[in-house]
Length: 255
Image 1 (cartoon, rainbow, N blue to C red):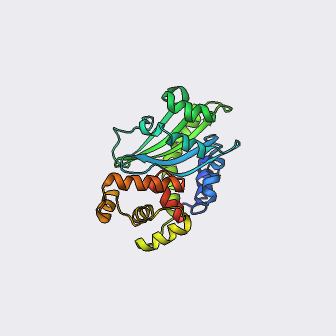
Image 2 (image 1 turned 180 degrees about the horizontal axis):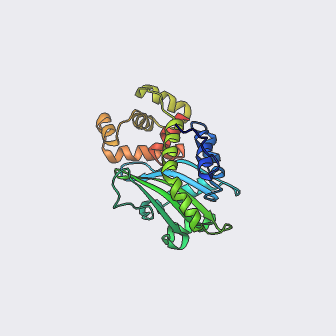
Image 3 (image 1 turned 120 degrees about the vertical axis):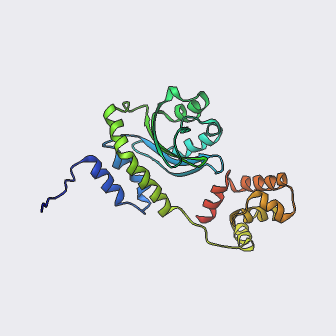
């Protein structure tokens, strides 16, 4: 029989131990970059989902050593670039498989580069990308202009950490993402009225049904209205609430 004490001197082991210790806590989001910095010295990161059949959703983001503009970057991305973003395409990958991506700012399409990268001082990105049916789940780490380019060694360390980082990030989202209480339509109407009194009766009816899980087509049938009319009420309500997507409505009410 052999007995020995496992070594914890490896930087990758220390990184993963530190992150595992933060699982389920809000500090995971703000501490991720500082834990990774010895191996992957990024100044900002963002974890999100985009693609057909889902609302664009930002799960986590933060910056290290610079003002945090990751929310502004996300809003700039949603202002147009995300609709034609091919920098995360994984067409040849099977569902749930992981692909790594490394791209520099000059390689990013002009509109995307101007609105997101140049406007916020980002120079380079490494990504963990997973295709989930028609959606894309991405973990992006950004080098900013004040930093040196990622070295071959850092890219190798990133590759080694990627499978564990993907699992940890998705588990953290599962543990901490707000969940809506189960309510009927009338209860959601009441809560929406309290949250935003300016919503009209039809806007309340549409949003309440979205919160119960109904599709826009289902809401149209339920209310006896045309689908374009439902979309108009939805868009007006979202404008009053200061949001753009159904996922933001869920987050707003869960919060």
